[in-house]
Image (cartoon, rainbow, N blue to C red):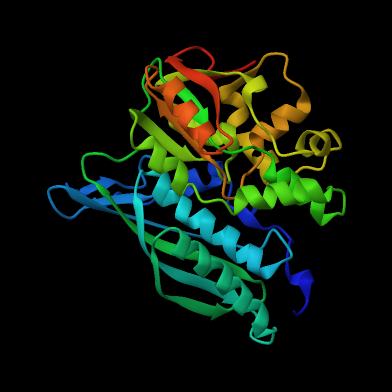
Length: 341
């Protein structure tokens, strides 16, 4: 299957540019001409673009790709595809079509590429979409992902910054996959931990968003490279605050122990540097702090749901086998944007 040293250097969403650096660059890009049909652009730092095409219908567009974070090409293809597809679900949309994005060394074993594409194609099919093409370039390092198009009702889609005071915050996957994958790269992660992380990363958020459609969701984002706290900070949109109960945060087996052993990611430290000033920790262990800053690959949805629907939604998610937990609530603006206790 070729040289696995090509894999797992700094893969998954740990390879993303830091939020601070990215924000600095985006702030300097001239704003596009006004178009009333562009319902969501990059101004809100949302998960995908939403463009209205008819009175009732909008399309959702996104793309995502990165280097491998696991040594198995087939699993890498599944994870990268699930991660890209997740942005459609974070907007409340339905996947329709996808295009492959491929960077691959020209002299490398093409069986590796075939396995990556097979894994990705299976996830697109599971999502109910059709893989309709793509683009490839020669590159010294393997990278793979998708450009995805979906649809959503023009008057019923989720933004990341629409939360309201009193909303309950529900997280739908466990945290810690970045830390566990880092530990695995240096041979310090238990097989059970890696298996649980892979299962989480290959699970589509399709099933979560299908359940959420029956409830009053005011905001939603998927937790990926900026970590739980980074994406939560974007959700607060500078005009809200929240309380997070760390005892409700579910974690990948072994992630806490790995964090205690300082098996951390550079991207996690970038996340801390960018977000820490917005967060107050009250009696939280260092390892839990690191898990909350940890970059997630193909992470869960973080949902702000009307408090009247929170218990029913959580019950439905749990009954469906989704590892969801009510982790906090949104408050009016406080001195500390995010309080973690």
